[in-house]
Length: 315
Image (cartoon, rainbow, N blue to C red; front, side, top):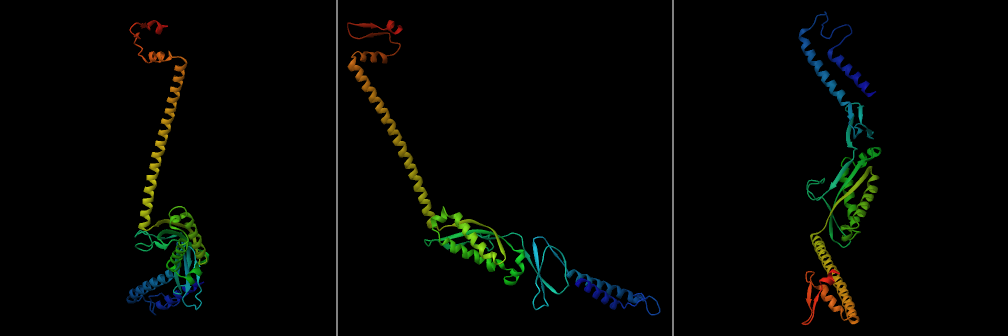
């Protein structure tokens, strides 16, 4: 309806400017002759009018691209008359409305120790005291999107700088409140995933009431003081040395056990031999012959006796 009224106004303005009267051409005088001098000026005037008309018409056309929502605001209404326009082609009455565009895709907000990664240049990680009072730096990324059903309320109460007004303060507050409830060793090892979940649920609860939907929170890194890092390194070195010493002791114990078993075996062997010698004194001669080389065939046992073992060995 607004565009129709606008086109009628433009048509009336063109008719008045060209001096149009029914039954006559734009460039003829009362006698019906063409006014050559006025043709050039009339053409210029028509071009100007067309340019102005196109400009006015184009200002009444709004195209909203995918992933965006535009808030339309009536500048001449004391109530504002806010409304949201989704993606697509929209026609509005020109010069009446002001527009604000919002990105409703998934966005990320990073607070990082690295200079070029976060929303702020430089070290933008959040430093917070632990339960013991040691300062640790939290490096994280938040994935969020705007609730299209509450985009008008967000525009009214917060505005387009919602990141600085509510997201950043909410992150900093939740990190400090959460980290202070944990010990430094818990943050270093066992409780890291739990801390991430607690911060995520807290931010999700706080921001959902303001028209911001939190999809995920990534606890990327936790920076510890140098003194703590040095202590951890020393502890790890000591643990490695202790493990090495434990290995050496276990090896020596196993070697001692092996020798003990070997000695017991030898002792039992000697006991058996002694028992055999006690029962049969000639057993020592058998052992003596058994230890000789296979190539030896003759043995002189004393000055009066020579034993030829060839036959015995053959048997």
